[in-house]
Image 1 (cartoon, one colour):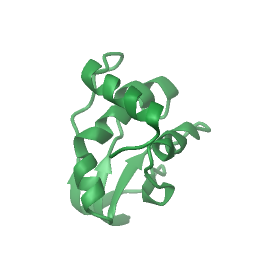
Image 2 (cartoon, rainbow, N blue to C red):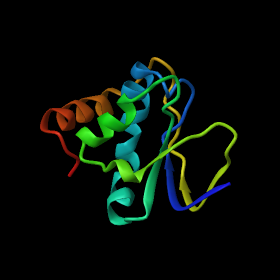
Image 3 (spheres, rainbow, N blue to C red):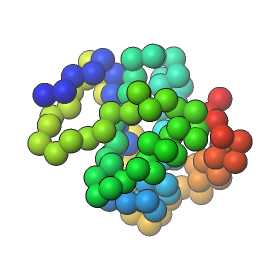
Length: 112
């Protein structure tokens, strides 16, 4: 068991793969960004399996600290006092509005 006070899950099918993380999972960070910034105990639950290093690196490019990333481990159960589960993004159908916002933030290198 892994307990955290506040968990924001950006997991979904294929979220360990580069395209799916970038186009489908990373934009979901915006849906819970205000809560993440207001609560220092919030962590982002993500998948870095199959040698994935880009998930944490992209979050760091946005100014989100590595120590607030909770990397999923197979066989562990995660629970929190507050858990945010943004709706899954349909595979290969990223939301254009969120993708445009993500592009702008990646170009300036931070979330404000």
